[in-house]
Amino acid sequence: MSEHIQIFDTTLRDGEQTPGVNFTFDERLKIALQLEKWGVDVIEAGFPASSEGSFKSVESIANALTTTAVCGLARCTKSDIDAVHESTKNAQHRQIHVFLATSPIHLEFKLKKTEEEILASIKENVAYAKTLFNDVQFSPEDATRTPLPFLIKAVQTAVDAGANIINIPDTVGYSYPNEYGQIFKTLIETIESKHEVIYSSHCHDDLGLAVANGLAAFENGARRVEGAINGIGERAGNTSLEEIALALYVRQDHYNLTTNINLSETKNTSDMISRFSGLRVPRNKAIVGRNAFSHESGIHQDGILKNPETYEIMTPQLVGVVKNTLPLGKLSGKHAFSQKLIELGYDLSPDEQVEVFKQFKSVADKKKQVTDRDIHAIMQGSEHEE
Ligand code: KIV
Ligand code: ZN
Image 1 (cartoon, protein in one colour):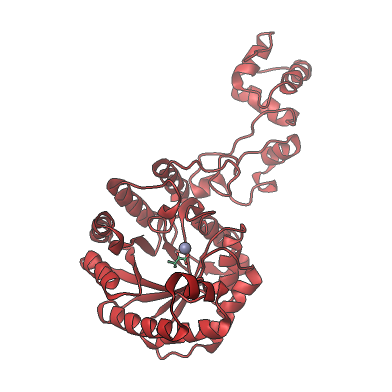
Image 2: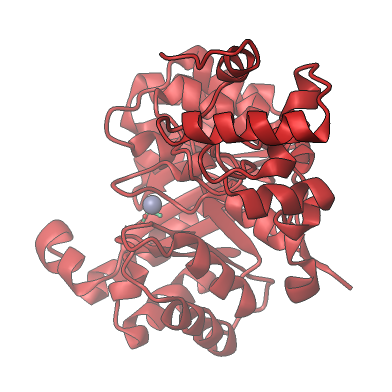
């Protein structure tokens, strides 16, 4: 029996913390509706206590969503919790995300609080949130730099106060997958609870490990993952949700974990975030980068033309990309070149093809990519120069 993984999208909250990104009110609503279409379980729509604009935006998203739950972020204070309550009160499904840092460096320099004060604040505020929400998520911020005994105390306090979702943030992207997975294993084995508790991962990509850490969390019992489309977010970003969704789908044989994601909407969703954020997706980005289904070398192009599975572990159509591409360059071989000639309407004898292929190679040596115009120019007997 496969188990369900909840996808918690924080593109509109942590994702918007990307330096230079500021979605408009309308863009935020459009993004939320697209995320619902993509099939996420929960959307963290913002941090309503942070500004009037944020409050109003969370409210409009809460009113618009029908199947996906809306969630708002709150520090461990009653006024923040009230702001999430007020802004989401008309939602069909809603959750609250309460957080407080637990690591020594945050306690000493940022919060200037003792461990006892932290535990008291968790107890009081999570219990208060529970009087307003059925689903209360608690995050010990900077969990991965928190000594395990204190992390266990903080999580146990939150669970005793009514939290039913525990999210473990790797706030500064510091953890290795085996360490991060071990934290989940230990918490799940140690925390006592009369109610069901779902464990969630939340990773940052400072060392490029956010997706790997999310997968390690699943292997150790997490059943929810937080992240952002295109991996946007603070500094190096958050876990890229499209990578998680496809890693689970493509390797079902390994994980046997399923999501509600409508994979064919992946590219549309990524394109929308790129457009509204003004952040271009790197060409070589997994799943949604322009090169993700593009094959350059002759050997690979030949393989793809014989059977795409030689070099593709998923079809482009699966994620909403129209088709793969075989750009012609100096590494391209005869197979891809003759395919291109047919596509462009040229019907050559084998001898003619050999001759034209030589000319193609000579053009290709001088350029990064040979375009259709170049091929037409070769066919007309003169090399096209740009
Ligand atoms: O990275 C982080 O610690 C956060 C918290 C608010 C959960 O984003
Ligand atoms: Zn974060």
